[in-house]
Length: 456
Image (tube, rainbow, N blue to C red; front, side, top):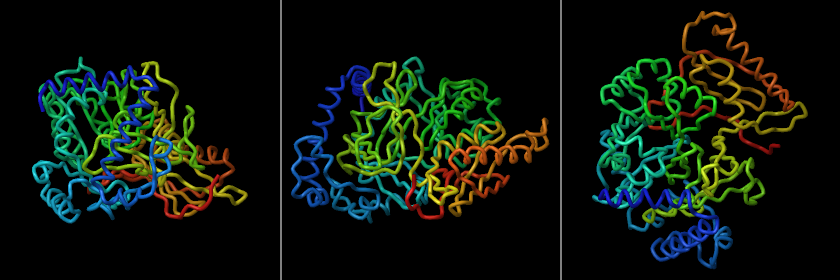
C-alpha cells in the first residue's frame, strides 16, 4: 500500500473522528449497514437464510434482526464468509502456523487468518482481506493513540502470538518489532533498549511483569499502549509513574477495532468502523453517560470477507460524558470486563447479587503497591479464593506491608466492602507467583464455577 494511501486514510479518519456531527455519524452508519446487508444477502448463504422474511430499511429495522455469537459463527463458517472458504482448510492453515510459530504469510496469498481462543478456550477463526490490512498504517496513526510528533515510530509490540495483520502495520516511518509475551522480562527490557524503541505496546498483565525492571529502561518511551485486557485506572497511573510515559488504551478485539483514544486520551467507539449496539437487561438501548450496558452487539462495517452482523460480545462497558476533544463518537468511560468475570455472591437474605469485576479489581489493586498480579476464583455462592503475586521484600517495613500484613488488610477491605452490599463471604487468600498463560489464551483474572441464577 502506498504512502499516499496511508496519508489519505489518516486524514479521512481524523476528520471523521473530530468533525462528524451526530447526523453525519448516523447517516454514515445507516448507509454502511445497508450496503453490508445487501452484500451478505447476495454472497453469504448463512445470512441470506437467517434474514429471510425480514425487511430492513433503517437502523430500527436492523435492530430486529437475529443476533449471532462466536459459536454460531464457527458452526456456519463455510456459509457465512463471502470468499467461499472452508473452515477445515483455514483451520489447518492456522494450526500449522501456530505449531511452527510461523505467524507471517497470507492464506491463498490474500487473507490474513487470526486464530483466537479468547478466555473460554473455544477456538475462533477470523479472516481479513489483505487489501484491508495493508491500510493499517493509516488506521494505526489515526486511531492508535499515536501523535505525528512521535514519528518515526520504533515499536516494541508484545502479545501472546503474532500475525501477518500486525506485521502489515510496518510502513515508512513505522517499524514494529514483535516479542511473545512469554519472553523473560529482563530480555524484553534489553530488546527495548537495543532497538532504541520509543513506543511500548503490551497487555496490562505483561506490563505488571515489567514493573520491577522499569528503572532499567535507558530512555523512557514516548507512550505506552495497552490492549487485549482491561486496564484499571489505578494501574494506568501506576504504569505512567513507573515507566515515565503517557499510558493509552485501545479497545481491539478479533471482531474489530472497537475503541480508540482521542487526543485527550479518552476512549471513543469507532463509529465509522463498527456499529455498536449497547443494550440494558431489558434489551433497551443504553444511551446515557454513566449507564452500564448488559449486552453489546457489534457489526463490523469494513470486513466484507467474514461479515459479522449483530455479533454478541460478552464485554461489559460503561458510557462516558461527552469528551472535550469535540468528537461526537461515543465515549467509553470504563471497560468493566466480561460477563463471565462478574461474581454472583449471596446476600444475608439469600439473594444472589452481581459484584462487577471493576469493583473487585479496585479493592485489590489499591490495597498495596506490592500487589503485581492477582486472580479471583469463585467456587460457591459464598466462597472466594484470591491469589496474590507480590513483588518486593517479603519482610519489608512497616509491618502492614509484609506479606501477612497485605493479606490481612485485603481481608479487612473485602469484609467492609462486601458488607455494603449485605454480603458475607468466606475468603481464602493465597500468596504465590501467578505466571502468564503458557499458551495463546488471554490472562484471565476472574473465574466463576457456580452457574449464574438470578441476580440484583
